[in-house]
Length: 159
Image (cartoon, rainbow, N blue to C red; front, side, top):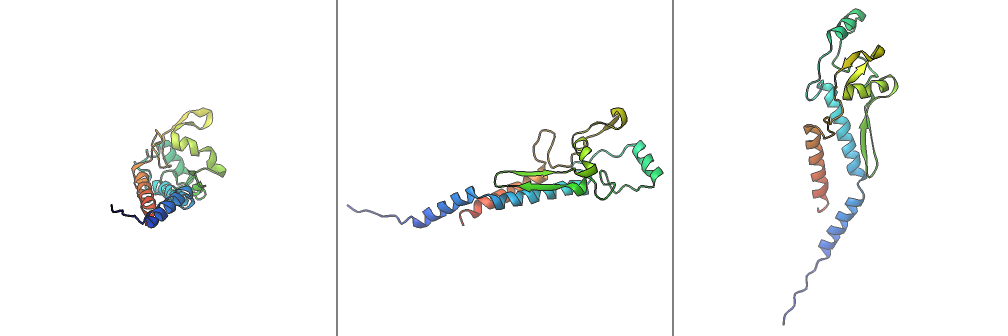
């Protein structure tokens, strides 16, 4: 009777490397953080994806009276909401957010919409700057970028 002995050391090493990669996701998390921050900033640059509701006639009149030329929706001044976008990550979690200083109070109302102003009489439409839809799913551009990154991460585990 003949026996065949398979030399599987190379396969074992590749699987060991794959397991190690799956347990140390720090680099992947850092990359995903950069993607989410970038996608958020691109939403500001594009005035929303999909496009945000325009400024109300009242807001435009106030801007004219104050000599303000709008640079885009949610981009009235330096140090505002756009400039407060930041991300964070650890091995298991990636977050992106906005709103610090003066913009902290307005970050949620711009993301989700709602009533604002004196006596909450002004209706602010949702202008979703974070890269997700109302149900919490990633917007298509962010989903595609993350999918490509995750696919590359997984395929590189076996190289």
